[in-house]
Length: 200
Image (cartoon, rainbow, N blue to C red; front, side):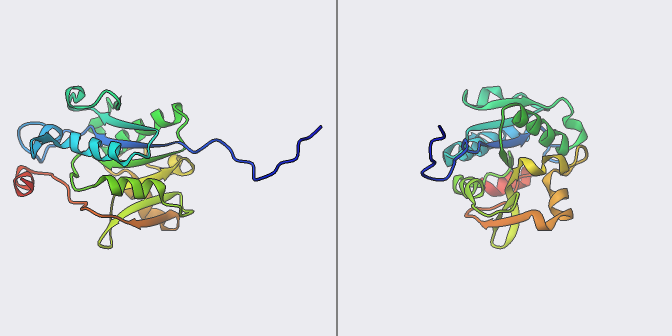
């Protein structure tokens, strides 16, 4: 006998993960690893990871590594994904994160960078939870698009497999797929020692 359904059939909750790209060699930064450069007494990558964790909305937080070993500054709750192809550009790091996400049954990822300490926990939260129908959601800061960026599984196969652009290439090519959410903070990144000095 079929039991009547008293309400809408609800499937399993969608799983959303944060993926922080931290694999690059930081050639413009100068001596030392940019990911480990200190800002306010904390490594840049630690600041990025802490914001994603503080958002409190992710089933997992993962960091893609390559040029620099970061285990000593990452909390044990973080998933570390190795990208042996990091020299080929940012797209390979994004793809490494997506390989992990597929294997874990993740439905959407929110992608950020390790060198943007002004991206707040609230920005991660807003992008992750934005209810808009678009499969790509980007953070905006005073009207300018930046990170983090949410990517639903439906667009993962459209993302570049190589080169130094990740989601930006798809966003530029398919603007109809993209929604935006205003966020507090700043998308300014740290590329050089001079940039770091300005932040400090």
